[in-house]
Amino acid sequence: MKKKALITGIMGQDGTYLAKLLLSKNYKVYGAYRRNSNYENNRLRKLDIEDKVELINLEINEFNSVEYTINTIKPDEIYNLAAMSFVASSFNQPLYTANTNFISLINILEVLKKSKKKISLYQASTSEMFGNSKNGFIDENTHFDPASPYGISKVAAHYLIKFYRKAYKLECCSGILFNHESPLRGEEFVTKKIVRQLCEILKNKRKYITLGNINAKRDWGFAPDYVEAMWKMLQLKKKEDFVIGTGTTYSIKEFINLTCKYLKIKIKWIGNGINEKCINLENNRIIIKISKKYYRPLDINYLRSKPLKAKKVLKWTSKTKLYTIIKEMCDDVLSSMN
Ligand code: G4F
Image 1 (cartoon, rainbow, N blue to C red):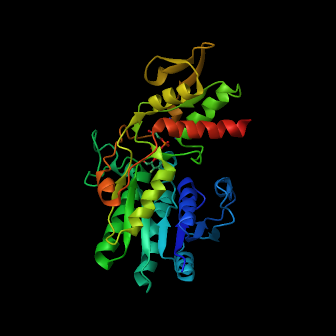
Image 2: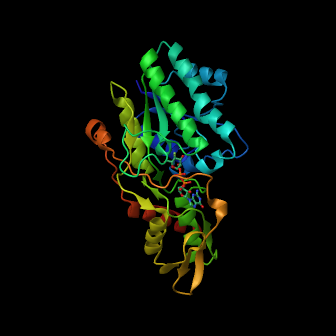
Image 3: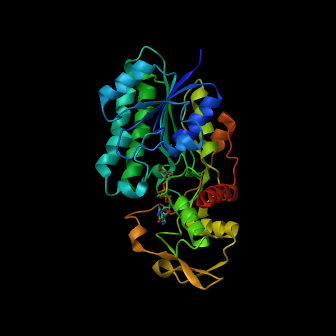
């Protein structure tokens, strides 16, 4: 009998790559999405799995909808990837963020608590939970100090998982994933914004890019590698939480430098802070400006993982280097512009 998996947030970057992975492992994949005005299955289409996944309309904030979906499908595994995942928006939508990222998880856990079938649950936790707690390597024992309503909602959800696992012996766990990018990354995230807009500059379709805090450092991995870790976590007999990352860190500015290198745009930086600018040496034009508009009320300055436990227990390591990720993202954008 085929194993059945239910993925919430199927339309997102991770949901799509995970669906592709599970299909390759011969799972029957159910993909839950929220019905809204901008229904978008272009990612599923891009990976050519649109017809291979059974799409289900689910409102994760409604207990009845969650209960009906889980009890009808009776999945072996649930991957809860549905979230309000854009940190910047969470400052203006704290309540919506809390409902979607935290309260809705109670719906799933309560259904699993009552279920006669043993269902494993993966919860998408995040490095945003650590905030600015550490300037060194971060692992599973690092203290949480979230710096956004998004981070706070994810810490709360993380503790829910621990609580239901301990109190009711549910088969649930959290993957604490550091940033992970790919050609399927949403346009609002900084890596995709930089890649797309630098490609547009290269093709004379744009004059300049406006960014916020380019000195923040992130541990960027490749989304297809990371969904493999999600699956591995749910295959463990004894469920545990894991930090998933590359162990390296780069600033946004370094990301820009690498992208320009790949696109063969020769640049130099001038000025400091809000007055910092990036100049295209070929024509002396400013191609990057900084604006307060993209600064957050509070930001995380440094994130770097220490994914040793994942290496030891899951036999998982991040395979794809940042320059290769940049290459994949640039090639994808450039090919869509031809
Ligand atoms: O790309 P970002 O928006 O990602 P962020 O905030 O790190 O969150 C992502 O990774 C988390 C894992 O750690 C996930 F949980 C979360 O769901 C999401 O996937 O911003 C990265 C950094 C920030 O410091 C931000 O202030 O880039 C800085 N930044 C500078 N200018 C900008 C911009 N970010 C965006 N989105 N847009 C800018 O113009």
